[in-house]
Image (cartoon, rainbow, N blue to C red; front, side, top):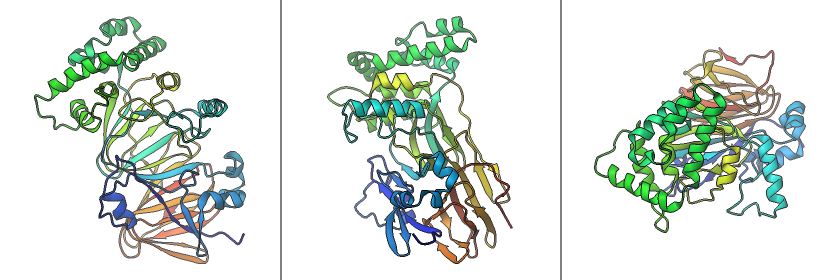
Length: 426
């Protein structure tokens, strides 16, 4: 293989039903006259949908390119740590309709589940398959527009208040407040209480689910629900988005009252570690995660819901989730730090005439232009980047991003690590 320089990438669009119609087509310059949903833009090397790299005019799937020279593209350290594979998956999501409530496994849970399902002979494409690979899937999402999501179980006193206020929830566990008072500050007792409540929701006979949710739907239908920062609005949306199947309601609607409702402003983000129940409700976001497609669902879906496995891997911690604003790293970069060693996400805002100095120090960088135009310059290369342009920067490459004509907003995915080199701007 010849010397590998910075590579332009073409991402892969996923046309899931919940996707929007305008943002991603506008970003990548695709007409969408037939109003097809454009849900996700994948910019990685996952075998399900690898991006395509332009290698000296030849189109090549990114996963295959990396497999041919993992040490050179990923760097020897990252190649050894991540088994010769790109450790992260970079995405843009346009959420027009609510996504399923879901959770992702730890690395150990994923490896165990993948092996078990393989041994059971469950096809990778089977609807009942939980584990598509043996990797974990922590993830960070940073909003590009106002963005609403559910994230983790609410503090238990808030759940107790919801059970008191919402008549249809009250009968699920009438003694919840009494048990909460009895648990006091004992962490395990509080987790056990939350586990018992959620298990009751997820294992309740379907006839009782229908009875309670039909009553809830009838009550909420009597008034207008326009406050997106309140759970009743999203319950009404969920009822519209997920109509009864065979006359049966989706029990995931209960979880809208049990999980934190988070409203992110543009530039704010959240980190979803393994075991955290969450759902994206509306808005456009940049998402970065470990290179995996493992999802277990807890409702708001017509797809497979494996309740025993969901309960096995779910974390029953509770509390208010942290909203990430990013930490300054120089005058034009904000880094959204997480505990993950698979990935790191940065936002780069360049005023006209400014430039950013970067280095793919610990593994390859992936960069997308979300607004404006820029030029990437490295030894022997000068690549103009319009809005929607994506580039892949192999390990060890020094580069600069220049905003010579218009301001530019870019997001960068990279492999975290320690180095003497400090990215910055001049």
